[in-house]
Image 1: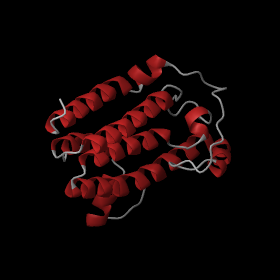
Image 2: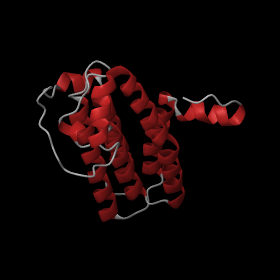
Image 3: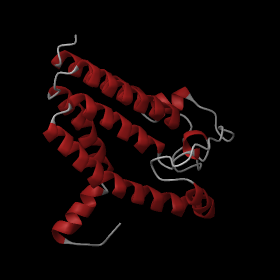
Image 4: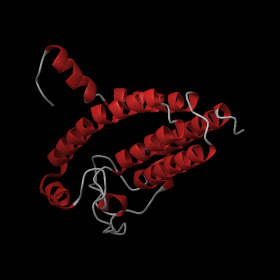
Length: 191
């Protein structure tokens, strides 16, 4: 994606580097937890939002068979990238709970730097794999934030716990999120 050189090329490669996006995203969570500002209600509401984001991810990851079958029902009937929506909710929840202005700035920069590029990359890849089927689905399905609530049941794929938790890695992510939440509650003096 892109053929620029020099600093601009390096930034392009960084934006499209999946492990950098995932690693930095995961690193932001304990940073939010460490720099949490006291405020019981805000912390609880933030952690509930993060929990909803992870539940959404667990559900979406249980019906996707990456690069083998185009998922267009269930979570994928609302948005093309429900895992990214889950990531956004998790980070937004931790940001709300944290409330540190510098951490918020870093997290917002992270979201704006990585996610538009990741969506472009994924869309380009999926169009190459699934062609006309993907283009038809794209015309009616927004990228990351639902614009309509026209849910289609999972007619072409049943939710599979092993697919979600083991193959797509949601179990270790869930345990990591739990550890970050416990750190946040401890740092805020709530446990």
